[in-house]
Length: 152
Image (cartoon, rainbow, N blue to C red):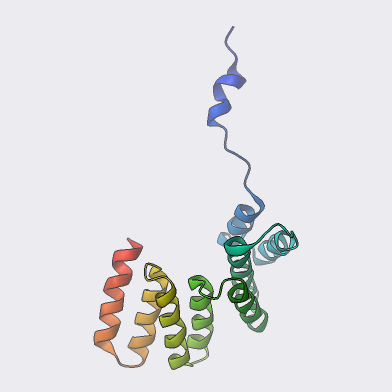
């Protein structure tokens, strides 16, 4: 006899992990929900290394969405305490500098992110933006081209 449940079983999606649920909340702009999910995830002692750095970095992103920039910077720095060359956290700190008008400090962070991971497209893109603000058009174009190759 035909069993519909058994037939459909391979098509069912796996439940989202707590981290994936937090990312989904971030994507929807539900920053408070994302923050709660990330905080719960970070309480787990088993979370270590790159996973912990990623969760801390995303916690900072949620805090930015909640307009809590000082706490966000602390979260990004905590990610760097776990993984000192974690490009996404370096870029996010650079973004905070850029928003504050500290363009040279932003450039330094973006360059550090590129030194850590030359294939991280957002670092090249944001460095291009910073270079443009400094009037370094040729450098800006070079970085935009590199970002375009990596992001597409």
